[in-house]
Length: 327
Image 1 (cartoon, rainbow, N blue to C red):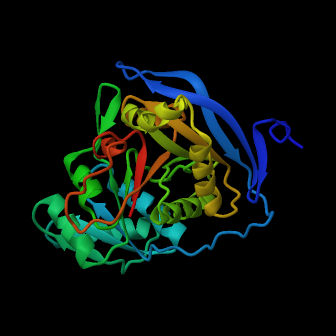
Image 2: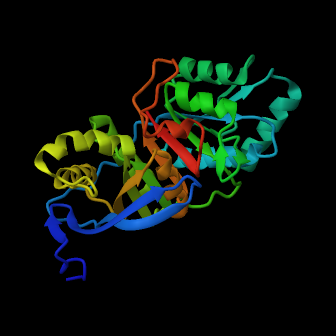
Image 3: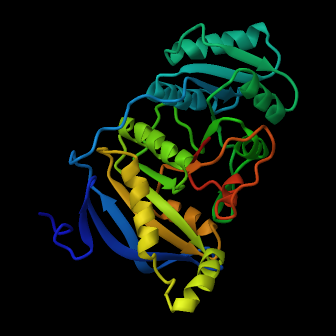
């Protein structure tokens, strides 16, 4: 028995031991994070009454948005890594007319990265964002990989205009890399924003498939609680004198159920409740744990601008690390 197993805050579940510690992350006006109380939960995978999750993936076709920028090979290398993780077919989307020079460049880089020479390359014309979005729909792409095109402002990196539109309007999943590398670094720490819908559970399972292949050392499943959320909750709790200063049992049980519903896994999972004046506190938490990838489940769009939930609306502007929007 471990120390956690002997703790009064630990209990046995069908998925293993869950241990609880409480913390709060509060974002101040200067964007600093202060610790007051800790909220975390660790799930250790076991084989007790649990089955391993299926290894299949819904990603059959993955596309990469390519430009002949200084990061051309790096973005393509990251796309190859993701293609390999999901055993998918890789397409290339390039906004520009096809000519001999461009064809040679693609032929050379495909050979250098040991990608199939006959990989589909889609040459598009017009506005970059519009052209990429149209190609995604026409080719029925399941996931797009691209550079984040970020720029640093004060303490936070911000998405470029094209990347912002892809996050909000793409009909498929989107993965953006802030600092792509020709020899991709393992995604050792991944943060997943909790979503209790059936689509959210499916997204968590998909995230675990990627995490297992990296391999991932820690997966954080985080619930975001804003001042507005607490004010709304207090309307009902005031009548019975309940406190909203820490997660109640119903919230804890819901987050636990989300994790357990994904099935047994060897990936260490830790859950956290993130509190702040706005959902942007989650961005600061992601940076504080030096996460390599932030995963955000979203409903599918119909090709229109998506109105993001208020507690995660910041992802269309601020990108604390590599970003994966799962649709």
